[in-house]
Image 1 (cartoon, one colour):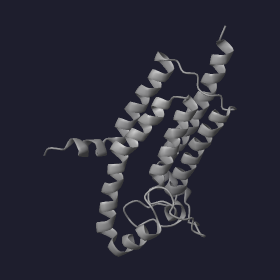
Image 2 (cartoon, rainbow, N blue to C red):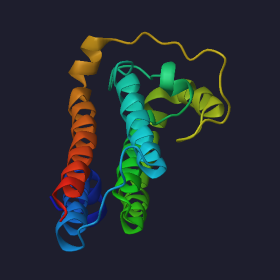
Image 3 (tube, rainbow, N blue to C red):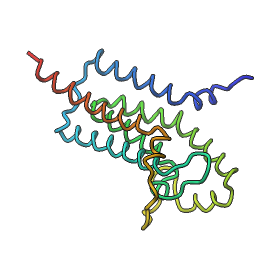
Image 4 (cartoon, rainbow, N blue to C red):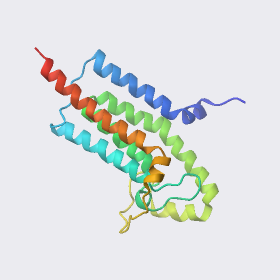
Length: 194
């Protein structure tokens, strides 16, 4: 059985994204030795806010969705059909802004277009086939990423157990660790400069 390059990208999207981000970080910190924005600067606060917004969005969505069983339409899914991907985009753009590297921002957007947008389309085709009428009504009310309108009611039953089952704690803790690393890196770089 052969696999196309496109299918390979979709299947290995998290690993590929991680390698690309790792290479960008290596380049930023060890080749050009960027100075990340201080968390107290406007850029640093904006970047950290985006990271926290993304981590919060992902956690909210992961505590609501029961993957492969029912169509999630409440909570963050009343605003966006793909709040997990939207949260990831916010996290990546937030770190890029905090690191203060325009190239990283463009790389994140390119990864989103080349790898994640086709994955979103693939998932939507699957859901359209599986959920039919429910899906048709759902896409009338929501957009792919950003809200068409803000519904009056975005309440949903959020479950810590579901959040853990979806292993969202990994992204949440990684986001917090990344922010802590940038703050420590900036602090040490300033303190250790002659």
